[in-house]
Length: 384
Image 1 (spheres, rainbow, N blue to C red):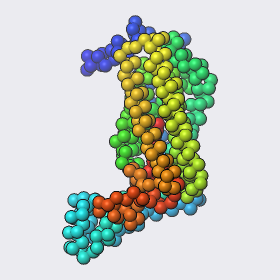
Image 2 (image 1 turned 90 degrees about the horizontal axis):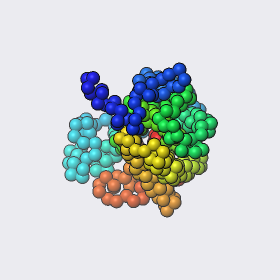
Image 3 (image 1 turned 90 degrees about the vertical axis):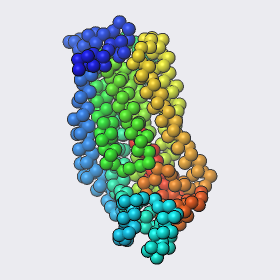
Image 4 (image 1 turned 30 degrees about the vertical axis):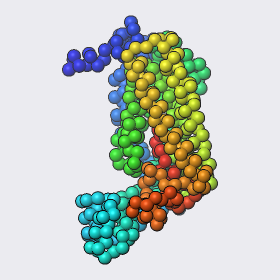
């Protein structure tokens, strides 16, 4: 075990040339990031999760009820033992051949069976009240952490000149504000890693899981080798659009359509500007080029930048989804059903879609126009 730890913490991987872990030990004059500090994130992640439960129960739920958001879920499928057995033991999406067989067996028409399976699938989905509470929690946290990040960074020299991220690196002292910011963000991402298995399930579960995993690796990496200054820029920049998305979703659940559309447009502009413009031109420029010039590359430097490029790849993917849905909204005057839908449409057009026909004009999730359908299902928790 000692040999494995010595290999893992090899100074030649983590630190620049001629720097050792002994050089970064805490002293009376200066405090530096220590790997063991990160253990604090686990109990804090649990605390954040418990705060979330209390917030949703005593703050978000009363707000939802005041906005007349109902706790009732989708329509319940009528009990049928045969269809229930097929649903639970064989398939939740029967093909045309199986539908015809069930139609003959039950003396039901095919469309009624399709409708039963759709309603049965939707029974397992959360109610609008549950969705609103989740979005309100995320909105509140994202707004707080982004506000804190801005207030912290505006007092730092590296916000105004990114070369300060690398001057005197890695001998940059760790301040209490920076330590709090980092541990809070890391704790939140750990709480998301665990709660993702109990939260509202979406079809991009794998992509979001990858995003949370990469974010945790990035935060851990940049803290251990004291790249925390540039790390704060990455965190604050990626937090900037998240609160707007959750606010737009809350407006959608409350049926404030004009506010929902406005917030979505603001979210799209901020997201694309920060993640496709500012992030590569400002942050990636300093991590790839300014750091190379001032410090020079070393093994963990390459890993850190590869993780940042992976995050940028995810940013491009989500930006594509946002632009795609916006183009559909402009061209059709309404948003088509998104691939990540949580609640399936009850329109007859979708019935025909499951029989193999094209449904290019399928309505949005709740049949309304604007960005409503997308915001029920859009790229939630982008870093979120």
